[in-house]
Amino acid sequence: MGEPEEAAGRTEQPAVPRPLCDVRALAVPGAAPGVTWKLAESGRQLDANVVHLPPGERVDTHVEPDLDVLLLVVAGDGTVTSAGTDEPVAEGTLVWLPRGSSRSLAAGSSGLHCLTVHRRRPGMQIGRRAPGTP
Image (cartoon, rainbow, N blue to C red):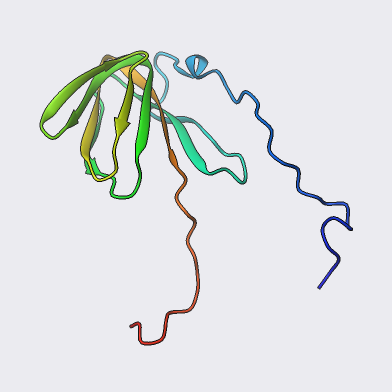
């Protein structure tokens, strides 16, 4: 089957802490909407994105059934709406969005740059069905 990785000189190195980026530098006025940065390190247990919403844009109401999400406003302002309550957010605001909660996010007049962090979703698994499963 081949030689063990260690014998072949390909031992996996443990991940080491290191700076990834300056999220403030990603908060550029007039930036294109959407994801401006994402965590892409192999072997990670987290997903993280910096997202830009231009002034007046929004993420429509949705429910995330499986993941808690932390949202940190990096620049700008806006509103998080959940359970019929509008919560204003601005630079430095940290919001917990618990799994199962209904929420939407709207950018204010200066737009909104935010960092979102959540547990990484497992990749698609291909396997055999259990006996008796249609």
